[in-house]
Length: 450
Image (cartoon, rainbow, N blue to C red; front, side, top):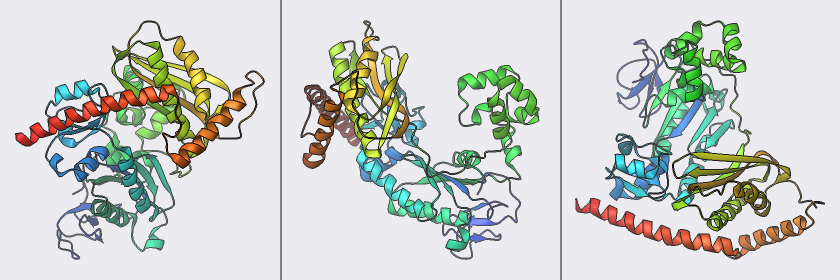
Protein backbone atom coordinates (compact mmCIF):
# COMPACT_ATOMS: atom_id res chain seq x y z
CA UNK A 1 0.00 0.00 0.00
CA UNK A 2 0.94 3.65 -0.30
CA UNK A 3 2.64 4.95 2.78
CA UNK A 4 0.51 8.10 2.75
CA UNK A 5 -2.81 8.13 4.58
CA UNK A 6 -5.56 7.72 2.02
CA UNK A 7 -9.33 7.21 2.36
CA UNK A 8 -10.49 3.60 2.19
CA UNK A 9 -12.42 4.35 -1.00
CA UNK A 10 -9.44 5.93 -2.83
CA UNK A 11 -8.74 4.49 -6.30
CA UNK A 12 -6.11 1.75 -6.29
CA UNK A 13 -3.37 0.79 -8.72
CA UNK A 14 -2.65 -2.93 -8.84
CA UNK A 15 1.09 -3.44 -8.57
CA UNK A 16 0.75 -6.76 -10.35
CA UNK A 17 -1.26 -5.95 -13.51
CA UNK A 18 -1.09 -2.11 -13.37
CA UNK A 19 -4.83 -1.58 -13.66
CA UNK A 20 -6.67 1.12 -11.67
CA UNK A 21 -9.80 0.03 -9.85
CA UNK A 22 -12.22 2.06 -7.68
CA UNK A 23 -11.62 0.13 -4.43
CA UNK A 24 -11.63 -3.34 -2.95
CA UNK A 25 -8.90 -5.53 -1.49
CA UNK A 26 -8.51 -7.90 -4.47
CA UNK A 27 -7.89 -6.83 -8.05
CA UNK A 28 -10.83 -7.92 -10.26
CA UNK A 29 -8.41 -8.39 -13.17
CA UNK A 30 -5.73 -10.61 -11.58
CA UNK A 31 -6.92 -11.24 -7.98
CA UNK A 32 -3.77 -9.63 -6.53
CA UNK A 33 -3.96 -7.81 -3.18
CA UNK A 34 -0.77 -5.80 -3.83
CA UNK A 35 -1.79 -2.24 -4.59
CA UNK A 36 -1.11 1.46 -4.05
CA UNK A 37 -4.02 3.79 -3.25
CA UNK A 38 -4.30 7.53 -3.72
CA UNK A 39 -7.23 9.86 -4.19
CA UNK A 40 -5.38 11.83 -6.93
CA UNK A 41 -4.09 8.74 -8.71
CA UNK A 42 -5.65 9.73 -12.05
CA UNK A 43 -4.53 13.37 -11.98
CA UNK A 44 -0.80 13.14 -11.22
CA UNK A 45 1.48 13.10 -14.27
CA UNK A 46 5.07 14.10 -13.35
CA UNK A 47 7.25 11.10 -12.53
CA UNK A 48 10.75 10.42 -11.28
CA UNK A 49 12.27 7.02 -12.02
CA UNK A 50 15.31 5.85 -10.08
CA UNK A 51 17.07 2.53 -10.69
CA UNK A 52 17.66 0.70 -7.42
CA UNK A 53 21.38 0.35 -6.60
CA UNK A 54 21.89 0.35 -10.36
CA UNK A 55 25.46 -0.87 -10.86
CA UNK A 56 25.24 -3.43 -8.05
CA UNK A 57 21.88 -4.70 -9.34
CA UNK A 58 23.36 -5.27 -12.80
CA UNK A 59 26.29 -7.18 -11.30
CA UNK A 60 23.97 -9.37 -9.23
CA UNK A 61 21.80 -9.96 -12.27
CA UNK A 62 24.79 -11.23 -14.25
CA UNK A 63 26.49 -13.22 -11.49
CA UNK A 64 24.22 -15.52 -9.46
CA UNK A 65 27.07 -16.12 -7.00
CA UNK A 66 26.58 -12.54 -5.75
CA UNK A 67 22.97 -13.07 -4.74
CA UNK A 68 22.47 -12.78 -1.00
CA UNK A 69 25.86 -11.12 -0.47
CA UNK A 70 26.82 -7.50 0.23
CA UNK A 71 28.23 -6.10 -3.04
CA UNK A 72 30.26 -2.95 -3.51
CA UNK A 73 30.97 -1.63 -7.00
CA UNK A 74 34.13 0.45 -6.95
CA UNK A 75 37.78 0.82 -7.77
CA UNK A 76 39.67 -1.25 -5.24
CA UNK A 77 40.96 -0.21 -1.83
CA UNK A 78 42.31 3.13 -3.07
CA UNK A 79 39.13 4.13 -4.87
CA UNK A 80 35.67 5.14 -3.79
CA UNK A 81 32.33 3.36 -3.76
CA UNK A 82 30.48 3.90 -7.05
CA UNK A 83 27.40 2.22 -5.59
CA UNK A 84 26.52 -0.70 -3.35
CA UNK A 85 23.59 -3.04 -2.88
CA UNK A 86 21.03 -2.53 -0.13
CA UNK A 87 22.57 -5.29 1.97
CA UNK A 88 25.86 -3.37 2.08
CA UNK A 89 23.98 -0.18 2.95
CA UNK A 90 22.73 -1.85 6.12
CA UNK A 91 26.35 -1.76 7.32
CA UNK A 92 26.60 1.97 6.63
CA UNK A 93 28.29 1.80 3.21
CA UNK A 94 27.36 4.71 0.93
CA UNK A 95 28.19 5.96 -2.57
CA UNK A 96 31.33 8.14 -2.82
CA UNK A 97 32.69 6.69 0.43
CA UNK A 98 36.42 5.84 0.39
CA UNK A 99 36.81 2.14 -0.28
CA UNK A 100 38.96 1.49 2.77
CA UNK A 101 36.25 2.95 4.99
CA UNK A 102 33.53 0.92 3.25
CA UNK A 103 35.47 -2.32 3.73
CA UNK A 104 36.05 -1.47 7.36
CA UNK A 105 32.30 -1.15 7.85
CA UNK A 106 31.51 -4.24 5.78
CA UNK A 107 34.61 -6.49 5.64
CA UNK A 108 32.72 -9.38 4.04
CA UNK A 109 31.59 -7.34 1.05
CA UNK A 110 32.40 -8.56 -2.44
CA UNK A 111 34.09 -5.76 -4.39
CA UNK A 112 33.34 -5.68 -8.13
CA UNK A 113 35.08 -3.47 -10.67
CA UNK A 114 32.59 -1.28 -12.58
CA UNK A 115 31.73 -2.27 -16.14
CA UNK A 116 30.30 0.92 -17.64
CA UNK A 117 29.62 -0.56 -21.06
CA UNK A 118 27.24 -3.02 -19.44
CA UNK A 119 25.55 -0.29 -17.39
CA UNK A 120 25.14 1.93 -20.45
CA UNK A 121 23.47 -0.91 -22.36
CA UNK A 122 20.93 -1.37 -19.56
CA UNK A 123 20.40 2.39 -19.28
CA UNK A 124 19.71 2.68 -23.02
CA UNK A 125 17.12 -0.12 -22.83
CA UNK A 126 15.34 1.64 -19.97
CA UNK A 127 15.49 4.95 -21.80
CA UNK A 128 13.89 3.37 -24.87
CA UNK A 129 11.00 2.14 -22.73
CA UNK A 130 10.49 5.63 -21.27
CA UNK A 131 10.61 7.22 -24.72
CA UNK A 132 7.79 4.92 -25.84
CA UNK A 133 5.51 6.61 -23.28
CA UNK A 134 6.32 10.29 -23.80
CA UNK A 135 8.74 12.55 -25.68
CA UNK A 136 9.18 14.57 -22.48
CA UNK A 137 11.94 12.53 -20.81
CA UNK A 138 14.72 14.35 -18.98
CA UNK A 139 17.51 11.96 -18.12
CA UNK A 140 19.60 13.45 -15.32
CA UNK A 141 22.05 10.56 -14.92
CA UNK A 142 22.67 7.03 -16.14
CA UNK A 143 20.16 5.65 -13.62
CA UNK A 144 17.45 8.28 -13.12
CA UNK A 145 15.08 10.42 -15.17
CA UNK A 146 12.00 12.63 -15.02
CA UNK A 147 8.96 12.03 -17.23
CA UNK A 148 6.07 14.37 -18.03
CA UNK A 149 3.07 12.23 -18.95
CA UNK A 150 0.59 15.10 -19.20
CA UNK A 151 -1.80 14.54 -22.08
CA UNK A 152 -0.61 11.00 -22.83
CA UNK A 153 -3.78 9.36 -21.51
CA UNK A 154 -5.60 10.01 -24.80
CA UNK A 155 -2.71 8.53 -26.77
CA UNK A 156 -2.25 5.37 -24.70
CA UNK A 157 -5.77 4.93 -23.35
CA UNK A 158 -4.67 4.72 -19.72
CA UNK A 159 -3.71 7.00 -16.84
CA UNK A 160 -0.04 7.91 -16.22
CA UNK A 161 0.00 5.77 -13.07
CA UNK A 162 -1.03 2.71 -15.09
CA UNK A 163 1.65 3.37 -17.72
CA UNK A 164 4.29 3.73 -15.03
CA UNK A 165 3.19 0.53 -13.31
CA UNK A 166 3.55 -1.33 -16.60
CA UNK A 167 6.93 0.33 -17.22
CA UNK A 168 8.18 -0.75 -13.81
CA UNK A 169 7.12 -4.35 -14.37
CA UNK A 170 8.52 -4.43 -17.92
CA UNK A 171 11.92 -3.15 -16.79
CA UNK A 172 12.11 -5.88 -14.15
CA UNK A 173 11.15 -8.50 -16.74
CA UNK A 174 13.24 -7.29 -19.69
CA UNK A 175 16.29 -5.63 -18.08
CA UNK A 176 16.38 -7.75 -14.94
CA UNK A 177 16.56 -4.99 -12.34
CA UNK A 178 14.07 -3.03 -10.25
CA UNK A 179 13.28 0.68 -10.31
CA UNK A 180 11.49 2.92 -7.82
CA UNK A 181 8.92 5.42 -9.07
CA UNK A 182 7.66 8.67 -7.60
CA UNK A 183 4.56 10.30 -9.07
CA UNK A 184 3.36 13.82 -8.29
CA UNK A 185 2.50 17.16 -9.90
CA UNK A 186 6.07 18.58 -10.09
CA UNK A 187 9.68 17.42 -10.25
CA UNK A 188 10.62 18.17 -6.64
CA UNK A 189 7.79 16.13 -5.19
CA UNK A 190 8.15 13.35 -7.76
CA UNK A 191 11.78 12.87 -6.74
CA UNK A 192 10.81 13.08 -3.07
CA UNK A 193 8.20 10.38 -3.62
CA UNK A 194 10.63 8.03 -5.37
CA UNK A 195 12.78 8.01 -2.22
CA UNK A 196 9.89 6.98 0.04
CA UNK A 197 9.53 3.35 -0.91
CA UNK A 198 12.72 1.58 -2.00
CA UNK A 199 13.55 -0.77 -3.59
CA UNK A 200 10.97 -1.57 -6.26
CA UNK A 201 8.70 1.08 -4.80
CA UNK A 202 5.90 3.26 -6.12
CA UNK A 203 4.76 6.28 -4.11
CA UNK A 204 2.63 9.34 -4.84
CA UNK A 205 2.35 12.83 -3.38
CA UNK A 206 -0.74 14.82 -4.36
CA UNK A 207 -1.54 18.52 -4.24
CA UNK A 208 -3.98 18.21 -1.35
CA UNK A 209 -1.44 16.59 0.97
CA UNK A 210 1.82 18.25 -0.14
CA UNK A 211 2.13 20.95 2.54
CA UNK A 212 1.12 18.55 5.32
CA UNK A 213 3.57 15.95 4.03
CA UNK A 214 6.44 18.45 3.88
CA UNK A 215 5.79 20.30 7.16
CA UNK A 216 7.65 17.95 9.60
CA UNK A 217 10.61 17.35 7.26
CA UNK A 218 14.01 18.90 8.03
CA UNK A 219 15.20 21.72 5.78
CA UNK A 220 17.80 19.51 4.08
CA UNK A 221 14.93 17.34 2.79
CA UNK A 222 14.89 19.82 -0.10
CA UNK A 223 17.17 18.52 -2.84
CA UNK A 224 19.98 21.03 -3.21
CA UNK A 225 20.13 22.12 0.43
CA UNK A 226 23.57 21.09 1.63
CA UNK A 227 24.96 21.06 5.20
CA UNK A 228 26.18 24.68 5.03
CA UNK A 229 22.82 26.13 3.91
CA UNK A 230 20.93 23.88 6.34
CA UNK A 231 23.03 25.25 9.23
CA UNK A 232 22.48 28.82 8.04
CA UNK A 233 18.70 28.33 7.88
CA UNK A 234 18.68 26.58 11.26
CA UNK A 235 20.61 29.43 12.87
CA UNK A 236 17.82 31.76 11.77
CA UNK A 237 15.30 29.62 13.64
CA UNK A 238 13.90 27.43 10.86
CA UNK A 239 14.35 23.76 11.75
CA UNK A 240 11.63 22.27 9.55
CA UNK A 241 9.85 22.98 6.30
CA UNK A 242 6.77 23.74 8.37
CA UNK A 243 8.65 26.67 9.87
CA UNK A 244 9.45 27.95 6.39
CA UNK A 245 5.81 27.51 5.39
CA UNK A 246 4.68 29.81 8.22
CA UNK A 247 7.33 32.46 7.55
CA UNK A 248 6.48 35.50 5.46
CA UNK A 249 8.05 35.44 2.00
CA UNK A 250 9.36 38.98 2.44
CA UNK A 251 11.16 37.94 5.63
CA UNK A 252 12.81 34.92 3.97
CA UNK A 253 14.00 37.01 1.03
CA UNK A 254 15.39 39.56 3.47
CA UNK A 255 17.35 36.84 5.28
CA UNK A 256 18.48 34.67 2.36
CA UNK A 257 18.03 36.73 -0.81
CA UNK A 258 16.83 34.80 -3.89
CA UNK A 259 17.46 31.58 -1.98
CA UNK A 260 14.68 32.66 0.40
CA UNK A 261 12.16 32.57 -2.46
CA UNK A 262 13.42 29.15 -3.51
CA UNK A 263 13.14 27.79 0.05
CA UNK A 264 9.63 29.22 0.39
CA UNK A 265 8.47 27.59 -2.84
CA UNK A 266 9.92 24.17 -2.09
CA UNK A 267 8.60 24.18 1.50
CA UNK A 268 5.13 24.79 0.07
CA UNK A 269 5.45 22.12 -2.62
CA UNK A 270 5.99 24.58 -5.47
CA UNK A 271 8.37 23.73 -8.31
CA UNK A 272 7.85 25.42 -11.67
CA UNK A 273 10.70 23.71 -13.51
CA UNK A 274 9.49 21.85 -16.61
CA UNK A 275 10.61 18.38 -17.58
CA UNK A 276 13.06 19.45 -20.27
CA UNK A 277 14.46 16.78 -22.59
CA UNK A 278 16.84 19.40 -23.98
CA UNK A 279 18.40 20.06 -20.60
CA UNK A 280 22.09 20.47 -21.34
CA UNK A 281 25.05 18.82 -19.70
CA UNK A 282 26.82 21.37 -17.49
CA UNK A 283 30.31 19.89 -17.57
CA UNK A 284 32.49 17.04 -18.83
CA UNK A 285 35.13 15.65 -16.48
CA UNK A 286 37.20 12.63 -15.53
CA UNK A 287 39.20 11.73 -12.45
CA UNK A 288 41.24 8.85 -11.09
CA UNK A 289 42.32 7.69 -7.66
CA UNK A 290 45.92 6.55 -7.32
CA UNK A 291 46.71 3.13 -5.95
CA UNK A 292 49.23 4.81 -3.65
CA UNK A 293 49.44 8.48 -2.60
CA UNK A 294 51.52 10.34 -5.17
CA UNK A 295 53.79 13.38 -4.94
CA UNK A 296 55.80 12.61 -8.09
CA UNK A 297 55.27 15.48 -10.53
CA UNK A 298 55.97 13.40 -13.65
CA UNK A 299 53.50 10.71 -12.61
CA UNK A 300 50.88 13.37 -11.89
CA UNK A 301 51.48 14.87 -15.34
CA UNK A 302 51.20 11.43 -16.97
CA UNK A 303 47.79 10.88 -15.39
CA UNK A 304 46.73 14.41 -16.24
CA UNK A 305 47.33 13.69 -19.94
CA UNK A 306 45.43 10.40 -19.75
CA UNK A 307 42.44 12.17 -18.14
CA UNK A 308 42.57 15.00 -20.69
CA UNK A 309 42.28 12.41 -23.46
CA UNK A 310 39.21 10.92 -21.78
CA UNK A 311 37.52 14.31 -21.34
CA UNK A 312 38.34 15.26 -24.93
CA UNK A 313 36.87 12.00 -26.25
CA UNK A 314 33.62 12.50 -24.34
CA UNK A 315 33.41 16.14 -25.44
CA UNK A 316 33.85 15.21 -29.08
CA UNK A 317 31.27 12.44 -28.82
CA UNK A 318 28.58 14.87 -27.67
CA UNK A 319 29.84 17.83 -29.71
CA UNK A 320 30.60 20.34 -26.95
CA UNK A 321 33.51 22.60 -26.04
CA UNK A 322 34.27 24.21 -22.69
CA UNK A 323 35.21 27.76 -21.77
CA UNK A 324 36.36 26.95 -18.22
CA UNK A 325 38.98 24.36 -17.23
CA UNK A 326 38.96 22.89 -13.71
CA UNK A 327 41.72 20.88 -12.03
CA UNK A 328 40.78 18.80 -8.99
CA UNK A 329 43.22 17.29 -6.52
CA UNK A 330 42.57 15.42 -3.29
CA UNK A 331 45.37 15.15 -0.74
CA UNK A 332 46.24 12.11 1.34
CA UNK A 333 44.24 13.59 4.24
CA UNK A 334 41.15 13.91 1.97
CA UNK A 335 41.32 17.70 1.54
CA UNK A 336 40.18 18.82 -1.90
CA UNK A 337 41.95 21.46 -3.96
CA UNK A 338 40.05 22.90 -6.91
CA UNK A 339 41.66 25.31 -9.36
CA UNK A 340 39.89 26.94 -12.32
CA UNK A 341 40.84 29.07 -15.27
CA UNK A 342 38.87 30.67 -18.09
CA UNK A 343 40.25 29.75 -21.51
CA UNK A 344 40.83 32.29 -24.28
CA UNK A 345 38.45 30.27 -26.47
CA UNK A 346 36.28 27.17 -25.90
CA UNK A 347 37.99 23.83 -26.48
CA UNK A 348 37.35 20.10 -26.68
CA UNK A 349 40.98 19.24 -27.48
CA UNK A 350 43.09 17.11 -25.14
CA UNK A 351 46.30 18.99 -25.91
CA UNK A 352 44.75 22.35 -24.99
CA UNK A 353 43.35 20.98 -21.72
CA UNK A 354 46.69 19.37 -20.97
CA UNK A 355 48.82 22.45 -21.59
CA UNK A 356 46.61 24.65 -19.42
CA UNK A 357 46.07 21.90 -16.86
CA UNK A 358 49.84 21.55 -16.47
CA UNK A 359 50.03 25.23 -15.57
CA UNK A 360 47.42 24.76 -12.84
CA UNK A 361 49.06 21.57 -11.61
CA UNK A 362 52.52 23.14 -11.43
CA UNK A 363 51.28 25.56 -8.78
CA UNK A 364 50.02 22.72 -6.58
CA UNK A 365 53.00 20.35 -6.63
CA UNK A 366 54.46 21.51 -3.33
CA UNK A 367 55.49 18.26 -1.70
CA UNK A 368 51.94 17.26 -0.79
CA UNK A 369 50.90 13.69 -1.46
CA UNK A 370 47.78 13.29 -3.59
CA UNK A 371 45.33 10.38 -3.70
CA UNK A 372 43.20 11.73 -6.60
CA UNK A 373 43.54 13.93 -9.67
CA UNK A 374 40.79 15.10 -12.02
CA UNK A 375 40.29 17.49 -14.92
CA UNK A 376 37.15 18.87 -16.54
CA UNK A 377 35.60 21.56 -18.71
CA UNK A 378 32.45 23.58 -18.01
CA UNK A 379 30.52 26.57 -19.35
CA UNK A 380 29.84 24.41 -22.37
CA UNK A 381 28.76 25.44 -25.85
CA UNK A 382 28.34 23.77 -29.21
CA UNK A 383 31.78 22.92 -30.61
CA UNK A 384 32.96 24.91 -33.61
CA UNK A 385 35.84 24.68 -36.04
CA UNK A 386 39.45 24.83 -34.84
CA UNK A 387 40.97 28.28 -35.32
CA UNK A 388 44.46 29.71 -35.57
CA UNK A 389 45.93 31.36 -32.47
CA UNK A 390 48.23 34.37 -32.95
CA UNK A 391 49.72 33.87 -29.48
CA UNK A 392 50.39 30.17 -30.12
CA UNK A 393 51.16 29.62 -33.85
CA UNK A 394 51.47 25.84 -33.40
CA UNK A 395 47.99 25.44 -31.89
CA UNK A 396 46.16 24.85 -35.17
CA UNK A 397 48.76 22.32 -36.33
CA UNK A 398 48.44 20.37 -33.05
CA UNK A 399 44.66 20.48 -33.34
CA UNK A 400 44.78 18.98 -36.83
CA UNK A 401 47.16 16.27 -35.62
CA UNK A 402 44.78 15.38 -32.77
CA UNK A 403 41.80 15.23 -35.15
CA UNK A 404 43.78 12.94 -37.46
CA UNK A 405 44.63 10.70 -34.50
CA UNK A 406 40.92 10.57 -33.59
CA UNK A 407 40.09 9.34 -37.08
CA UNK A 408 42.77 6.63 -36.83
CA UNK A 409 41.47 5.50 -33.44
CA UNK A 410 37.93 5.32 -34.76
CA UNK A 411 39.07 3.21 -37.71
CA UNK A 412 41.68 0.97 -36.08
CA UNK A 413 40.85 1.03 -32.36
CA UNK A 414 41.64 3.25 -29.37
CA UNK A 415 45.16 1.84 -29.05
CA UNK A 416 46.12 2.56 -32.65
CA UNK A 417 47.82 5.80 -31.66
CA UNK A 418 49.03 6.67 -28.20
CA UNK A 419 51.60 8.91 -26.53
CA UNK A 420 54.36 7.72 -24.26
CA UNK A 421 52.49 9.16 -21.30
CA UNK A 422 49.32 7.34 -22.27
CA UNK A 423 51.15 4.03 -22.70
CA UNK A 424 52.82 4.34 -19.29
CA UNK A 425 49.55 5.08 -17.52
CA UNK A 426 47.65 2.30 -19.28
CA UNK A 427 50.37 -0.25 -18.52
CA UNK A 428 50.45 0.74 -14.86
CA UNK A 429 46.65 0.61 -14.55
CA UNK A 430 46.44 -2.75 -16.32
CA UNK A 431 49.00 -4.20 -13.94
CA UNK A 432 47.11 -2.85 -10.95
CA UNK A 433 43.78 -4.02 -12.35
CA UNK A 434 45.05 -7.59 -12.74
CA UNK A 435 46.32 -7.50 -9.17
CA UNK A 436 42.97 -6.22 -7.87
CA UNK A 437 41.05 -8.75 -9.98
CA UNK A 438 43.05 -11.56 -8.43
CA UNK A 439 42.34 -10.20 -4.94
CA UNK A 440 38.61 -9.94 -5.72
CA UNK A 441 38.60 -13.48 -7.12
CA UNK A 442 40.29 -14.78 -4.00
CA UNK A 443 37.75 -12.91 -1.87
CA UNK A 444 34.81 -14.39 -3.80
CA UNK A 445 36.30 -17.86 -3.43
CA UNK A 446 36.46 -17.40 0.31
CA UNK A 447 32.75 -16.53 0.31
CA UNK A 448 31.98 -19.74 -1.61
CA UNK A 449 34.02 -21.79 0.87
CA UNK A 450 32.05 -20.38 3.79
